[in-house]
Image 1 (cartoon, rainbow, N blue to C red):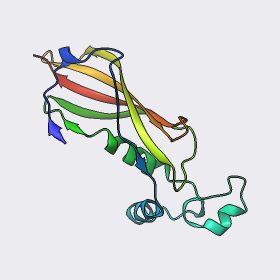
Image 2 (image 1 turned 120 degrees about the horizontal axis):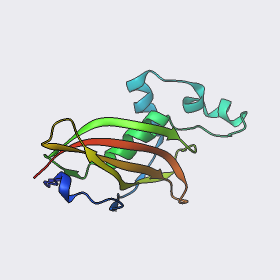
Image 3 (image 1 turned 180 degrees about the horizontal axis):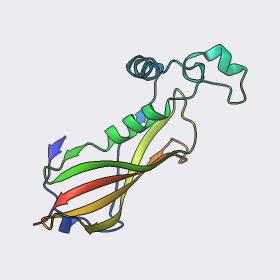
Image 4 (image 1 turned 60 degrees about the horizontal axis):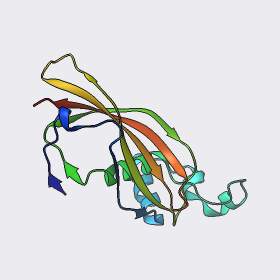
Length: 146
């Protein structure tokens, strides 16, 4: 992790970056359930899940989001501020043993209320080891101009 100043003018539509991967473990399920209080059987009861059409435990969507977004934090941009996330969708289930990575594409740029800033939208895809998109969202940034 390192600091890299990237100003509004430096962002280009369709620029893309890809993160390293991260394998999802049973420990991830347990820790996330403990942090959130979400102990639903879909995530925690292996035997019950065997009786369901999906056949195995499913990762918490919020955990996949947190890990996938965490993978994107390899550089710190002191010129940008996160305004949040829009249009998040859980596209496919993630299971113990799956390896996910994130692909980030600059999809939009615009003007901000403050003329010293601009808005940037990063479209984020979280993808499993089979190349399947498992989660999508848009990361909204407020970025300083030069």
